Image (tube, rainbow, N blue to C red; front, side, top):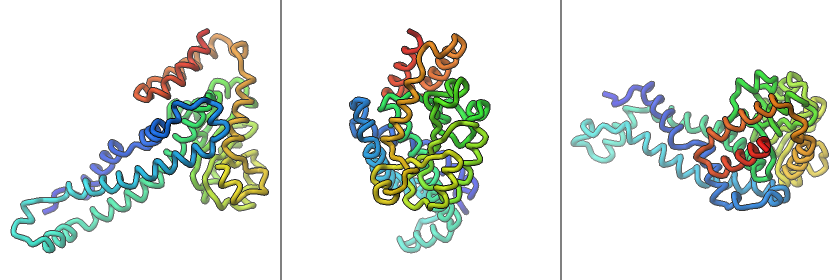
Length: 304
């Protein structure tokens, strides 16, 4: 007799994974542990690529043992002590495997799918904290909500807009749209389609992919989409490709756009809308001191 049905076990795995292995929490932990919360903005402009790589390494090195513990804990939930009485160690293991082949398979499959999903979420969080460290104002889809991004014609594939959603509505030419994908594969084809719907001047596609073909780069370039990657990846794989820029260059572009916006650019309604979005993000990150302070500083600038 199985202790858990397959459906019940899958539900438990999903719930426990969300509780124990939140991608943003791991990235934020890395950001603090590596002392980036103590760095000045100039550090990020000069070392953006190194920050991205260091946070990726931190997340991976901390995730692997956590995933092992998680898998062990999930499998232990299936153990029914009463059904193993009188069995030798070998017999008990064989009985367990024979009783739960699909459960074990689904856990392994879930781990594989989760790795892909969390890699993207971690990458988005890394870029978000990188921009915060550099003092670049922004709104993120994860904080503001997909519904707002779609309503404002930003689309579902834009992860970050700088300086923010309100500024995008006011003047698209002085905003930066950023989409993050650790690897492109066939999914890059969605980005030009989304770009056409936004009507923006350009979009930045941040990736760690080391094998983007010339054909793909040409197609993205025609759609006014620029690849952004680490300085190391650019030097090793795209050294002669001007259409690929590094994270240091991206921060410089965002900073230049930021200089266009001053208090005189906004009317009262627009200022209020900016503050509403900032408050929403403060509330979401009330347990992340560095993030809260970042948004509180932005809010103070609008309330002067």
